[in-house]
Length: 259
Ligand code: ATP
Ligand code: MG
Image 1 (tube, rainbow, N blue to C red):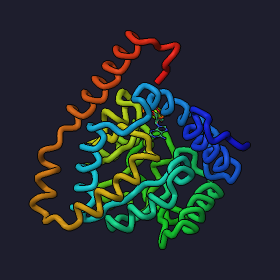
Image 2 (cartoon, rainbow, N blue to C red):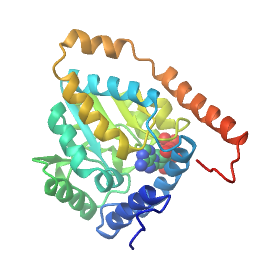
Image 3 (tube, rainbow, N blue to C red):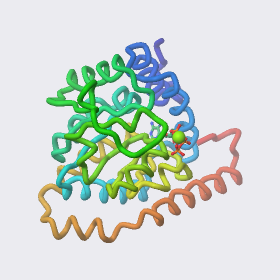
Image 4 (tube, rainbow, N blue to C red):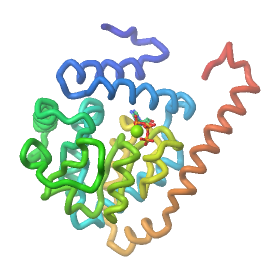
């Protein structure tokens, strides 16, 4: 499908195309398309831009990754389809390992995702096939299977687009969990140690930039960033922003000027 250059929802439609393409290539699960729709709705409410509260979370998230002993980036289908090159680059700059971890796990999809990441420059991808031989104490989903060289021993896990149950399970294991979730009300957003309320397509490139900057800082400074970060406050600010935006829009000529 070709999308006209001046289409008002062009960016959003291009993102959808990437997911549909990912679905056809067995990278994205059918359920992943639905999950994206829920995210899109919140992106609408946020005005489809990165706000100050997300920048604060990005800074703290990157500081955590740089301070970690065993940082791991957990990759699912939507993440691989939307930001493959960026996620590989983020792993490079922060020294994190990449691990495939799927809610709807099939060998074919694991392999398709690992191959996709390799094509975008990844040197190693954990969690494929027999490598996911360890289990984390989580009852229901296939996501409990993890790599003993990756998520099992990780102190900091970056889990963009995570599910609430799993975020909780990882926190219970004492890990620092960083999530990207456009919905500040989701259990993921509430359970994570650092929640980046932003679209993954905007957040990950900003994380790379931040990592390049923070890398030159000493550990004390990074520890200070982590210490001063308040995730509850960040979630409150996200909700306040939505509230404010709706207040403004509801008192303006909404029909004539939707943006
Ligand atoms: P939870 O399990 O955390 O309570 P949920 O069950 O409501 O959340 P899921 O279906 O598990 O939601 O995951 C979808 C979530 O991913 C949505 O909350 C949505 O906001 C988020 N999401 C989807 N696409 C994106 C995206 N491109 N960028 C950021 N967040 C996204
Ligand atoms: Mg869920």
